[in-house]
Image 1 (tube, rainbow, N blue to C red):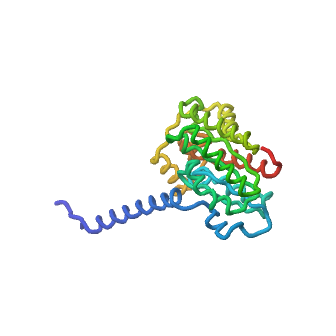
Image 2 (cartoon, rainbow, N blue to C red):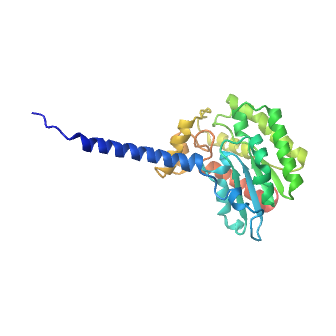
Length: 273
């Protein structure tokens, strides 16, 4: 005769497992997509320029700058000994386009009265329906606003590849946006930091198999879960997805973040990349 097990403990256990799964998923979603960047403008510049005698640097852009999914290159700069006394304001917002950043430039950049501003924005323009001409106009307006309202040095960063197949169609589209970035920098007489060029050189030298762009929310969520729940480094997450410099075809591995941080660090300390 089969023994009957009480159903109530089984149901309770199932509910507890479900609650745990949902709780873990909610934690990943919050840490990755909902929380703000470390030292955002709303905190650092709520009453104007941050207090302190050291230089104020604003890094403005989208999710690659926010650094909650993938390497936090702004935080890495903040931790370097040569920048003791600096205030790094992270004005990165997940999902932003150049037009979105233009809409908040006064509150998130100008109000900080920065000594230096670095702009890394445009990946969402490339992925969306923004034309190159519209992007160029938005970027030019951003630079004009910052230069007319502050005395900050300004640098534009070229956009990293999307996926690690440099010959993929989306990277040919991205090339046009990077040309717009370089031309805008030249026209405005400001500095251009070759992020894309250094990524491309590293990928060519590594000899690894090219991985075509294949970004999606499920992949981004899994990448974040591996980092926040399993404690894997962003480099380990990238390798698990067959990538080197990008964890999910867009956001930066630790190696990718180090390339960006090194370029910006050299610009801040020497005046050029």
